[in-house]
Every structure is written in C-alpha cells, then in structure tokens.
Length: 113
Image (cartoon, rainbow, N blue to C red; front, side):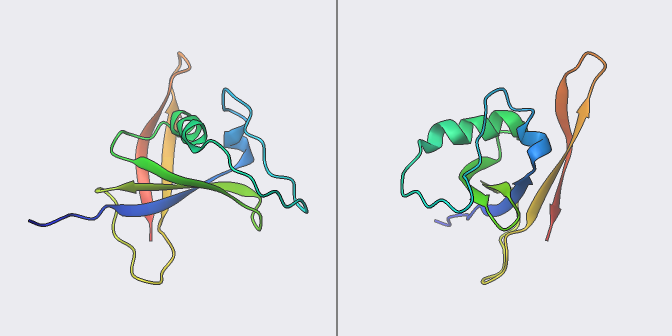
C-alpha cells in the first residue's frame, strides 16, 4: 500500500485582497507580544471563501508575516509539487476575473517554484 503525500504551497495575501473580505481580518499590532490562541477553523474558512480556492486545495495554516506585513496562507493539494527538503514552499498565485455581473472566479493558478 502506497501513501501519496500532498504537496504544499504558500499564498501571500495583501491588504488589497483582505479589504475585499466580508468580515474584518485584523492584523496583529507590531511591537506587541500576545500569547493567545485564535479559533483556526473560522480564520481558515474566512480565507477559503475570500481566496475562492478549488476544493482540491486545503488550507492547513495561516500566519501573519511581520517582516512583509502581510498574511501568508499555507495550502496542501495533490496538485502541488513536493518541495525539496530544506527549501521554501513554492508560491501559489491565483489569477481572478470579474464578470460584468460582478461575479469573481479563479481563471488560473500558477505555481512559482
């Protein structure tokens, strides 16, 4: 019996995209250290609905990258390549389109190694 391992990738989520969310996603305040937990399921669901990722991509992590001051979403999928040991995760870049009636959808997902 062989077990296939899912590949992983990261998406950098800018302020421009976060502003389009139906709920407010607050950034951590820099210079403040807070040891606390947040309910991950709600945060994952918020980013899943915001990013419109196909079902084959599962969000497995979300964190705030203070050095670039943006959210980073980690996804896994059999459609993604496995990164080499010790290397950075590939970057996932979805391309969206908005139709005349205002509907938004993904038209392409690029993987940058």
